Length: 293
Ligand SMILES: [Zn+2]
Image 1 (cartoon, rainbow, N blue to C red):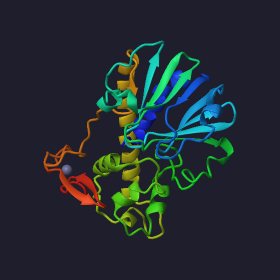
Image 2 (image 1 turned 60 degrees about the vertical axis):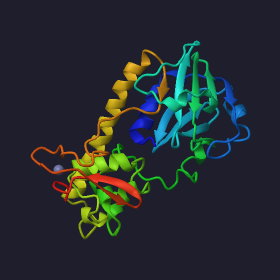
Image 3 (image 1 turned 90 degrees about the vertical axis):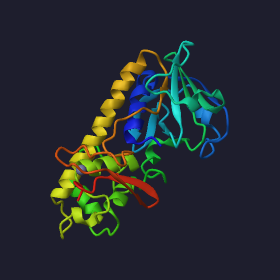
């Protein structure tokens, strides 16, 4: 499943062909993804200009000249493909073999920029909804979403306050979207490793008795921001390669430090430990017991 950096990379890939462009024609090839498409989906998009393409947590938000927002989520297997003037999509850094099947091209946007933007989703856990801008913050999918991890409001005191009094593991707290938005299994493992904190540690131990941040909270927030920024940077460089050819947006290979590295030597300088895999809340956690305490 794509996490925040992948969604941000998709946003940056789509912005040049969607921002300032009008939906000339929209094809909804089936009535539903994870949820039904709005009944008037095509009608509310065609003729509208995208005034801005943003992101909130793992959702893309296309602001329309009508005052509506097109809310999009990639789900488990969704991806976008951009082609211009009949140029065939070419595999690149973003290559994802299943998406080559046009049978899973469910929504197609023909933009006034000359680009065709195709949403492909074999498993159909993706989502497209249209919500009036003024109702977005209170929408059921949005109202519980916590702070953006890369936003200036997200700091050690905010994270500590959200974790204070929690008896769950630190890993479970970070996966809770009300605590911080957009983090998934991969980047939580990576951030905890960089901060040298055990994923099994009780969440409340990053706060003082009064709920303020301690040194662990400071290290953790720094690590979260660094991990996400590095991944977005990596996505950006694959995007630059990809732009020359046009192609698919949604997945790219990253180099992780602990995730999926079970049994391999820890990369923390001077550590000498071995990456271990445990299962927490039904999901794999990768960490180094030697340097993550
Ligand atoms: Zn280590």
